[in-house]
Length: 117
Image (cartoon, rainbow, N blue to C red; front, side, top):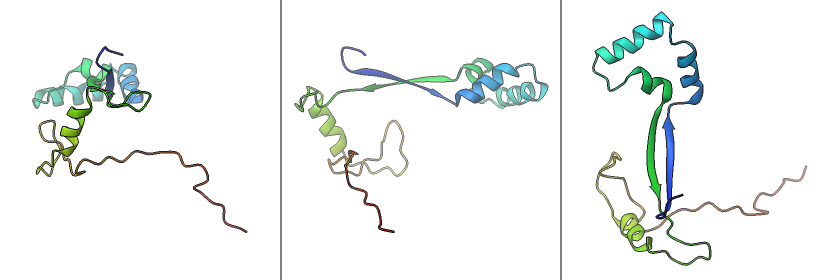
């Protein structure tokens, strides 16, 4: 938790793969593949494969626990109302098509009915 919201951290790559690479770091085939990837100029190194790539992204609260809008709400509305024209999402151009709407999942008790047998 930060004063402005939350600093979410995501590690790219499944934990089982990183564990397998660490356990098999002396494997000649694995070494060859890593050397090949590095030799081809891919932005990768052994530590990255073994530890994963840590990415950070902010989560800003737009509504507080009582349902009141926070200071971030106007910036949030500006973002979701920005109808971009790009077709492939990137950091510079997210594909927004919601016209200011957002889907929020909610548990609905009794929404599933059982069929009579």
